[in-house]
Length: 537
Image 1 (cartoon, helix red, strand yellow):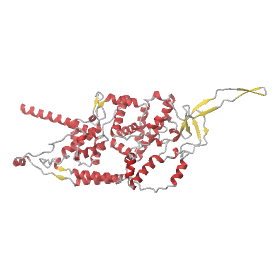
Image 2 (cartoon, one colour):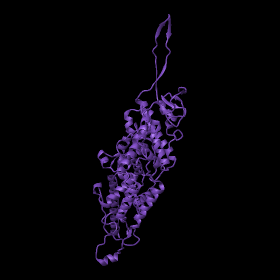
Image 3 (cartoon, rainbow, N blue to C red):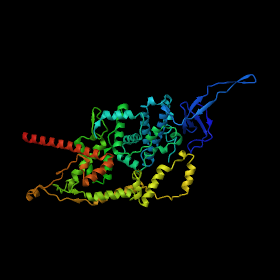
Image 4 (cartoon, helix red, strand yellow):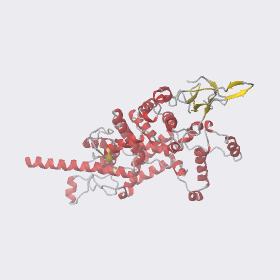
């Protein structure tokens, strides 16, 4: 390790006043407060020369020069990428803790999960980096930074093992989700996707959070890893989460707890504005189907279906319970007694309207969302109103033109002067706090419950007296195999349920269909048992 020396330019972190730096044996440069400055390589001029001067021989003193390469290559480049990746992961966890009020233990859990994953990267890292625990945790520690379908288990594990050498940004979301899962918090994949699409959780343009000195040294292929261009889809995130869970189970023999069903189910009912009678119905269905809501506990299973995942198990049982108690069609079904839960009729028209009003309020009416702004084309701009143009310019200013202080370059003063020539007033924020969101949810639930009515009860005696076949709850049950078959209220409810769970629509349709098939098999078994019992009597 070299001695301390003075850097007249000071630390790259504007909040740090230190001007003393040192270069580690690995080539990493730090200030005396621990902030990373860059990576340097040392060359020594070994050439010696002799010159004649008044008959005497003189020798040129060897000089030590520091030569900073424009782009790093090999192991130093990969180590720099890991430092940048770790910084982004740290910022994601910080946002979840401080903005979404998750427990502080989440930082410790994700840190330990990341440390485990670093053990799978020995051949692409130098020996010093692998054994330097301080450098591994320096960026992650909150004290060092102040920031205000069907497949096989083997396929999933193989893909995760191949991608572990270069962690991708979507896998950082998977690590955050794994930490949330271990804390058993009622958070879904749909929440992560929503936060990313709203531009709140760091994902798109994550590279802008990397200090310029680090970004300039990183090769282009790593730039693209930290600056994803495609949208984050439910299928992409679910695949990353599944591969990550399988990887930790396979390589580190980790055992994960089952889904926190009581909290998750209660929140699902609240978010989807469903009657509370769904709660016991889902519990009974899960017991009949032997769903344990565990993440890939059966290690001997070779084939993995969508229904093997706990998120799919929960949302599929909720949908089946809704279809049994509150059918999505307009067929009138008459219960046998007032004790039947299906005596209450859910007005699906009122449900759709309440959901739409809630979404409009959360999205601030016709305001251009972050996701929509990211997909704007030239033709869209020509059709925009003045208000939406302002929204788009706000998005562009936030995403592309505003650099943090530690990333400003020599052109920053010019850009500042140029922007000062066109001042823009501060626009009102569309942010809703937790109290407003809770009030809107309560209003949505009350609107749905207020529109519910009671169905007339028709007893068996009344049915025999009328000499007509009465349609009972559970009859004329319609199944869907493909998302394209959905229509009307069924399509609306399936879509909202899929968005909440964080699964793509076809996967949810498939999971529901598989659950219905299992119930059909159970029904046939019960009928055979009843017939056998009757014949034996």
